Length: 306
Image 1: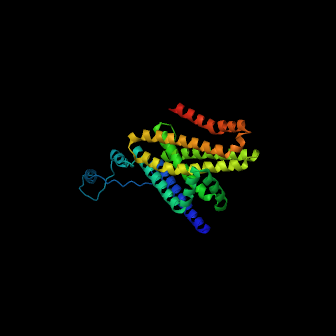
Image 2: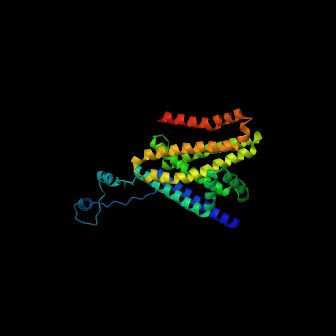
Image 3: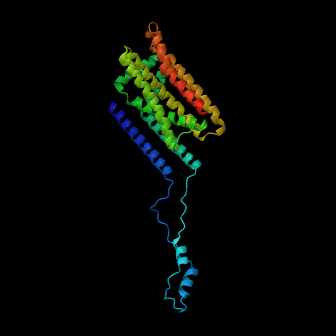
């Protein structure tokens, strides 16, 4: 059973690599706006009128007696019109980006649901109840962390795409093409969560809270898995839905994300309940500096951009 799971995971990793290669090739296609120096233009034929003038200009009437063309005609012949290279419009590039991203997300989701359907169910159960959370956390030690990390990576792909749509809606100035903008959004999201996990590991190493910190870090992973599945239909609707429906969809999704964030705080209180009686100040200090302060800074930056 474990070997079959490893084979399925290898297939998923292979398809993810293929999807990244397709994204890179599409990005390089959009980046090529200059003409190809190796493209050969067809040789222009000499107009019939010029041939007849060149043949009869010597006055002999001999068609085989060639006369060198004049300098004016030589200049006219040397100027070759450049064939216009078809340029992809901004609207066409945007539609191609949406098609590649949505098809890639659906392909990855299909592979994950086929190979890791049981892990999706476990993550959803751990998202709802503490008992299931503790059970999944214990089972993770025997199964391994790779299935959960793959599902967690799917959250970053969807989350980066949703942040890209937010930047388009609020007119954020992100440099680069569409694929590069999505990469920046995804990289920023990955960096933010990696920094949080790193800080949690440092806290667990310094203070005698390693077990609780590891459980809370896994809780963040579980919530990310569920949000990645939730953001899939949202991104599809934002990509191909009517534009009049986009404001309702964006603000409604932001409201649900805030509620999910608050629900995760409530779950974290139950994890750290044995420290609340004697270390309330330290717990509040952690909440304010690690959880609330980064959100306030991001909101401030967003309001300054609007």
